[in-house]
Length: 93
Image 1 (spheres, helix red, strand yellow):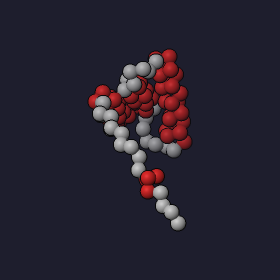
Image 2 (cartoon, one colour; image 1 turned 120 degrees about the vertical axis):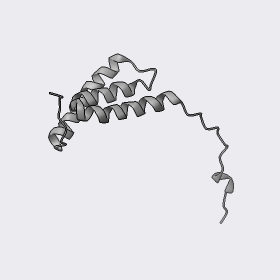
Image 3 (cartoon, helix red, strand yellow; image 1 turned 90 degrees about the vertical axis):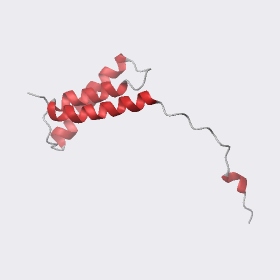
Image 4 (cartoon, helix red, strand yellow; image 1 turned 90 degrees about the horizontal axis):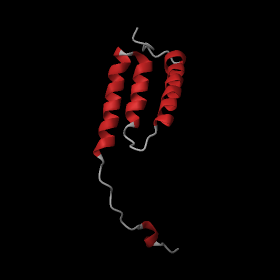
């Protein structure tokens, strides 16, 4: 039985440097969601998370981001607030 040891080796590739902007934007979006969910309701928190998080990608287009944010917010409200009964208000009022 012959073993091909060369199949276990691959050429080394350099690891890309960590880009700070996406890391910071996503972190701020998540922290903002946590705050907004308790003080602003699920709808505002979800919109914040998706729109703020989309800023991590400099190539994002508003014509794609806004409908995506609206659809995901509606879906999240139906699943989490109504379907699973998560105790978070939909609106701040």
